[in-house]
Length: 446
Figure 1: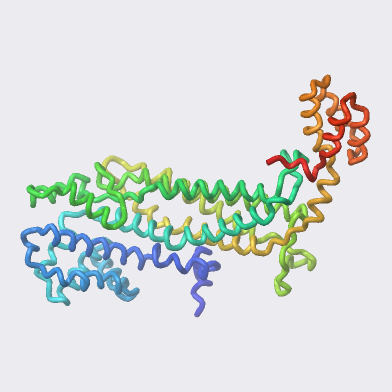
Figure 2: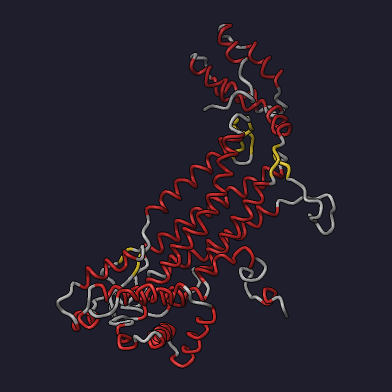
């Protein structure tokens, strides 16, 4: 078949391939190889800059040529690495051999043994993966999240003066304002983005069991701890020390948990808007070429918010597993972390799909203000809180119980019911005027 997306096992690379395509630069097998090559090359350059005695005569003018190995790495180059891996049965060793072959082609093979010098695979993996995650979050995830946030922010401002009946436990409650309810989601997301900005992207860089044994035995006079800190920092990461053979992933788990919290807020938003649409507080812009139901021609379903909720749930499930599994490893390491790290891109992909759905769904909302006003008008009983509070202020006897008796008769409470009730109260005329001014449309607080 020509359309290979139809053959994909996961909808991330199948049904939603067009939406997730930007993430291939960070989480595909090709991307992982490119990041590994990048770390190996930058490490070699850092060794030259010490310089190690055997690298003192390496021409620093060739550094950019070396960087071009990863900057210009093609999928065909990555395929060559995979061919080498078929022989080595080791993915990182295959990268090392690939780079050494490039050194040979460039006429610098005599320095080839300093590629991967003193390192173990996880020194490469535990820098490559957090680096790819960092750049994916900064370049793909956050820009899209901020687009959605910008829409929420503009709706909060646009509808800040629209009174709306609140629903607590699904029942009519003290009125609020539509813009304020969007503002709640705005500030929740902003706070989580702020917390995410405070987290560092951790990397492990310390040799076979984290102690830089090989580095120390070969060059005992060099402060390798400081070198490791500087090198990892140069990649935009923060070195974890001490470690075992692997990064302990606590901070990586914190990043996953933080994004999961953002996703949970967006699930909350999706469900609320879905409910508002079902209450007809919002209509949706109609695309006349779309089909809402295969059987019911009239339907315009809130599919964007349902799609978002489903994909956010998928993402959160994987984020939860990553954050709970990765920090746990037997003794100095086992391979379970390597297995699950290959799936870091999966929850990011589901999150991106969800954000695109939210962006689309929010853009289709049309405010149905008459429905909102009609709901307020049907629920004059909600001003009971306001009336009993003022009566408390005036030291009126049993105000709560008095309003409870009025509003729980089972009969409809309307404007006239409240007006008639006010006339029965033994309070001053100025207090009655104060009470008469209260309505579901004005009792909205700050």
